[in-house]
View 1 (cartoon, rainbow, N blue to C red):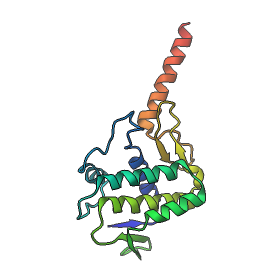
View 2 (cartoon, rainbow, N blue to C red):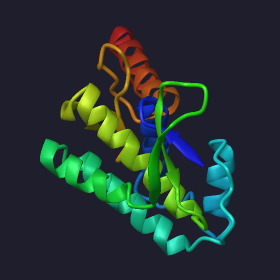
View 3 (cartoon, rainbow, N blue to C red):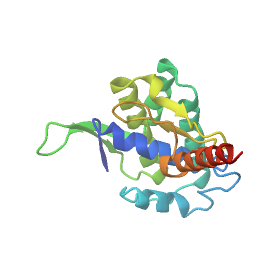
View 4 (spheres, rainbow, N blue to C red):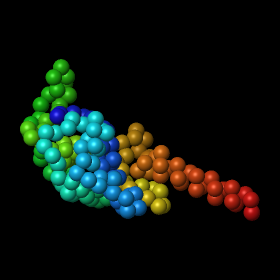
Length: 182
């Protein structure tokens, strides 16, 4: 598997999706509950399936590490932490028929190794291209999610705009109706 170093938007999206599988985001419901879950997560994100079985606890530890980086968006902390996440990389190369740089996983890599490399590339790319202020907590009052904002204007407010943003909009609409009816 290779990860293009300039495709940080895709990689940051996977990092965001990974941290938002945690039980604290889903009011106690774990979204990576069993050993098959990391492989399912990899398939969902069109990642090549590694050859080794993965350790669920390793994916949970990775998720905690990535969440810690997003929650503490100090530039040096982000760079140091994300650089450590890229340790499963075997080497950096140019992609065939392209001028794009990429990193490859070492042979025998696990799902956790692939996710670690992707999250590291995503975080480093966002820090370099967009800045540390793009790492945020969800703006919905009842959500404990976090995200990496890779939008062009940098004004994203919710970890899952279709879910959290919609809930806030519905609550605001109901509050307006209630005030109008008084």
